[in-house]
Amino acid sequence: MKITVDRIFCSLAILLMVSLVYSKFLLSVSMIGLVVLSIFHSDKGKKVIGDKTFLLLMLLCLMYIPSILNSDDIEGWTHHVRMRLPFLFLPIAFYRFPIITEHRMLWIHKVFFVILFISAIPVSIHYLSDIDGMQKMLAQGQPIPTPVNHIKYSIFIAYAILIVLWICLNRWSSLASLEKKIGVPLIVLMVLFIHLLAVRSGIVVFYGGLIVLGFMEALQKKKYKILIATLVICTVLPFVAFKTLPSLNKRIHYMLWDLDRFREGNGDDYSDSERINSLLIGYEIFKENIWVGTGIGDFQSVCAEKYNTSWGPEKKVLYPHNQFLFILGACGIIGFVLFLLGMYGPWLWSGIPKFIPLILLLTVASLTFMVDNILERSFSAGWLAFFYCVFLSYAQKIKQVSI
Image (cartoon, rainbow, N blue to C red; front, side):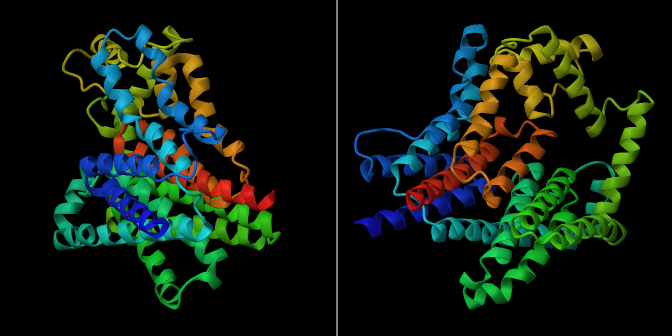
């Protein structure tokens, strides 16, 4: 029976990881499947959840519940709560499952890397089959078509590369012979691919995570040449990519052009200028609703009102492209404190706060928070909730060994 449950878990985990790239519907199906499996095949008795790290993670969903009190738009409130359901369902499922071993944790990440590598093949073929057309799109600020939103997709790729790189650096002896033969070449190809995509968020997150990885490796192994080598790579590689990859070159030139339009006061209809305007609007809203925010349900209408006042009714309304500012505007300082507790509390109380893969997950997420409100989308919320729960379950194993 235990072997059967493990196989079902692995199948649902694969389905969830594939769904992160391809299907919102199957993402929901896989999460519900994990919860149902955990309820009927659990070694935790009748207790739904009893670990403070999983309880803290659930705050990322539950923090929106009190916001109904100051939200007139119940439909808007329901929408945002629904987007955060992965932080409610997955902690329950992973707490009730048998604890994840290191082997299973590594297997999950390697499978995720392979899924993303396979998904990159048609994207690359599409780009190479119409390079001129893709270059024109990039020159106009449009992204290369990807199976899921290009920003989220590049974030997933950056995370997968960093974790598999860590695996190769620290678990080389445990890898199968085939993994050793293809591991490094696949990492190189994926690093090339993330630059080819030319999504700045993914590239910045990748290099930020790489610096953190180099710093932590140097600190833990007391080999500071690792950090020096990492800094050299993070200096030279972007320059080489900019000079040799037309897609990245076009994207950077468009960004500089866009910022020039913003400085001239003529950038209201361009992507980067729109993002900057969204931050300014978000900050204005926060200043007017410091403690409890507008209410998550009413946040969109308040943003629309601000946009209408500043630019007129035809202006495209955007939420603040910053997760922290989004929370401050919608839920105020009180909600922001709950958000920080739910986001970083499980890491601090996990028992493995120095575990590099977990640090990399939080680094990737935190850097992304600076440029996007990714937790208000089901794909990225599912990604963070799933891999956070994998690490928290693995942490329970470490705690058992240390007792």
